[in-house]
Every structure is written in structure tokens, then in C-alpha cells.
Amino acid sequence: MNFIDIQNISKYFKTKDRKIQVLNNLSTKFYEGELTAIKGENGTGKTTLLKIVARHIIQDSGSIYWNTQNWDIFLKNNLSYLLLSSSRGFYYRLTLMQNLEFFLTIYKKKFLLSKAQEELESLSLWEHKDRRFLELSTGMAQKLSFVRAMLLEPKVILLDEFEHGIDQKSVEIIFNRVQKLKKDKVIIYISHQQELLNQSDNILELSNNSSNSNLSQIK
Image (cartoon, rainbow, N blue to C red; front, side, top):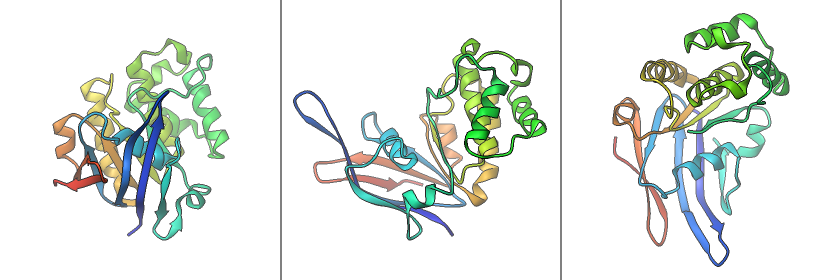
């Protein structure tokens, strides 16, 4: 079974007059085939952890591995996709379809219209395919980000409050889809919805003290 191995990760952010420690000497593993939820109080570093795994930011110390392989080397040939609660990263003046075609080209993935249509229809976006991104609501933009993730077929999927701004029916569609994908992917998600947390294989609670950050298994 493949896994992400996080070893002694620390991260701090500088303000004008001090450093703020967000993660301190955190170690854990996330396994393929398991749907892992992370919970914790605000400010404990949940989003920071996912951003480090996705390489949106880099840790100050510690290492990450895919099994025993360096994580950055692994990512050269395998995608990791982070869907944030306010995900954007699209071109505002392009249509939904143009955005999807562009990103698949960037990542050297073949664009299949039938596949794109299937994904867009599943989240009631197909009828909006020719609308420019700037015209979308927050919820529609969030759903489009998930469609992009499905078309890119990443090996690792990271979801940070993906349900933000999305109607409950679409949340259920997305989560059911994620559950079916877990067999050959590492999937980690952050949520404040207890119903979503309860459907995970594992629930880890992130907490901090003066000497380290800790992910305690509570399910």
C-alpha cells in the first residue's frame, strides 16, 4: 500500500516583529485506499499542512516522502491537487470549457469532450459551459475546480472545506465520487461538517503545544 510519509515538518510565518509557529515537528502517514479527515481548532495548521503537501508552500524543516521516494521527485510525474474553500486559479475571461481545455493542455492530459461533458453534467454545470469564469458564483467556481481535478486525474487529492458555497446535493455528489476514488489515491480532507467527517475511514485531530504538533487518531 502506497503512502505519504511526513517526517518532522515545521512551518512558521514571519510578521513584522515576530515569527508565528504554525506546525512544529509534525510526523504522520497518509495511506492510499483510505479516506482521511482532519479536524481541529482554527489556527492549528490544517490548511498549512495541506498546502505543504501540495507544494503551494514549502516547510521550514522536515521531509516528505512517497513511500521511500522523495516527495518532490514523485510529484514530477504525478499530480497532487489541492481544492481550497475559496479555490480559484482559473482565467476569468475564458469560458468554463476553455479553462478546462487549457489546464489539461498545461498538464499534458488529453482533453475529451465527452468526459468533460459527463463531469460538468454531474454537477449541473454543462448548461454554463460557454459562460466566462468571471460570471460564476462562488459555488459554481468551486464545483468547476472539482471538475478540473477529476479531468486531471491526480494521484493525491486534498480537499480543504470543499463544501464551501456549494448546495448540499452537489456536496453529496462530490463526496460520493471521492469515496469511489480512494482505492488507488491518497485522499485527505478538512471539513467542519460532522456528517462528512463521520464518513471517513480515519479522523485525525490536529493540535499544537509548545514542543510539537500532533495528529491524534480519533476514529
